[in-house]
Image (cartoon, rainbow, N blue to C red; front, side, top):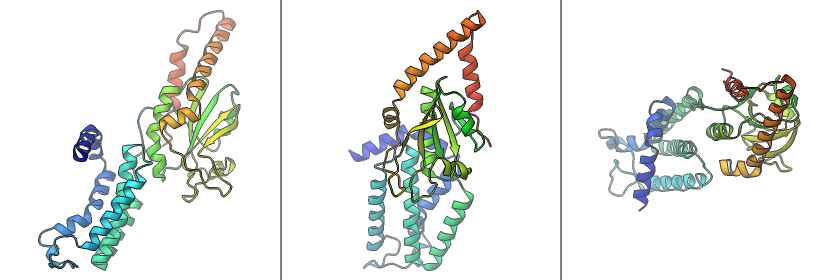
Length: 302
């Protein structure tokens, strides 16, 4: 049954997996994940490797290697319980597989361990996870524009994501936040993002730590009238984020997006009526112009 479920899941995500094959990051990550298994099983090479098996077969895993691989599987399963997207699941597999491979290679041969560790360092420095570039209605702030934009119109509610490009959690959350912006963005409810890894002053002003130990990335802040109303995840007295799952259902529930969206739609209608009364003529195409303006705002600052 488990095999059938895994096969169905693989077939369901096959189009997305095919797209991954076109991206060097995922290809290199997969090769580094299976590196030890390939070396241990490679004909002509495995015969010269050390082993602790009783039968002396150096082309098969010994009992200690199997223990390490089983421990790796348990860790990945525990981490993936909180994973939301397929990218998060695969990111956990890639990360902990590399850690396990470093241990296995050093145990097998210190020279192979040093070589693999050097490859891991080179991979981290040169190969970055691909950024989400799909459709979205999101305005990207800088340290000079965020305050002015949040305070420009007190009737507009903003949901702003504080993120850093180097954070894998932020990269995994990007398509979820983009999808929410497509569903709920309107005149009175807007979505924004600011890279606090790039703008440290914004990080300090809004008290969102970029430290990996604080686990505050990503952070979602709700602003009404230019002031912060709530944030997720919340932060305890020690400056550490309280555990919170960044999925679409939690965000809709915690931030009352359905209610905010209905109120914002009423604001849009009332604003259109006021403009119509002031101009003395219907404001035709206002929705299309607003949508076009939102689309232009959503382009990333490269």
